[in-house]
Length: 183
Length: 183
Image (cartoon, rainbow over all chains, first blue to last red; front, side):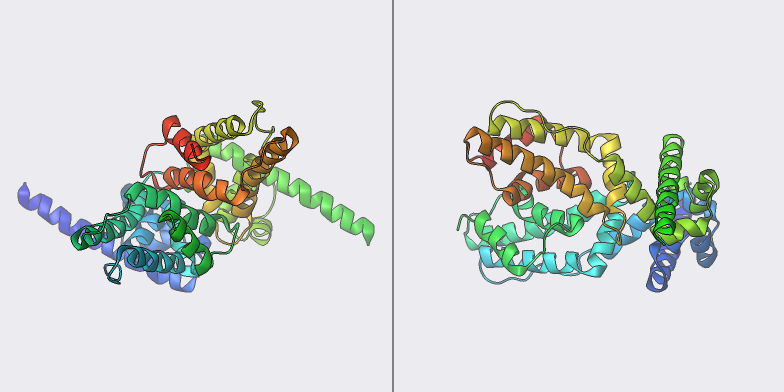
């Protein structure tokens, strides 16, 4: 029984890897709207029903692939003080998320309704902010409030990226940060 | 030439109406992930290429239909004072957008990258906020700042709806409003 579960796990992981890789390959050469589940299945060497069973539908699969690509590769830069750490992180976050690639990843993550891609996506942000808070504490600084940082700095940035209602300049991002720290 | 353009316009409007109606009918009975362009074309009596030419792809069409359904039907309630008008509007906005229907519409609007559905969607919000501001001015109240209302009240609400990282209680929404008005 244990061995069966392990084998299943191994097979399951291989399927996930093959399907994710296929989706990423397809996205390099075509629009999301042109990609279909049968096409992904064929190139991954699995059946369409395997994909439907595992991911529900194409939008869940695209969300899963997108959030996987958003996984952070490094901690935020350590600039020596909390407010400058925070500003550097926010400027980088805004730049990455507002790029063509960032907007496509966000659209894929938020285009799904059933899966947990959106929660996973924002947990990466929470994790980085928590790192900045811990660093501040270790320096003897009073750390900022995590929830307020999301509400008053991260959320407006994400809103403007998603809805395209205003340009996201570094000056605007810096003003959000300055206001957050009461400067 | 003028007649030709008018006829085109009429035909174009009829196609738009038929396709929108078909998508809305289909969405009542099946998941978005099951809906395809050929299916919509068949039920609307148009060719798939008509749909691709006009909307680009399925996600743009779904975004277009969703934003059309989000078009406001009435002005925000007039409660007699700016802060209570604002709070009433925000509570209703949060309730509608966090409902199952609201989240599905937001996912459709934001799942598109090319069209103008996201901008149209947030213009509805801006329009309502502008109505509240004009009403405040007419009463002799100092109107709130539109951009700040979006940044510090609307954006956090939308963020939490989209990413599912915290429950959106009326108390939380009221606290955002109170903080915005410096109470």
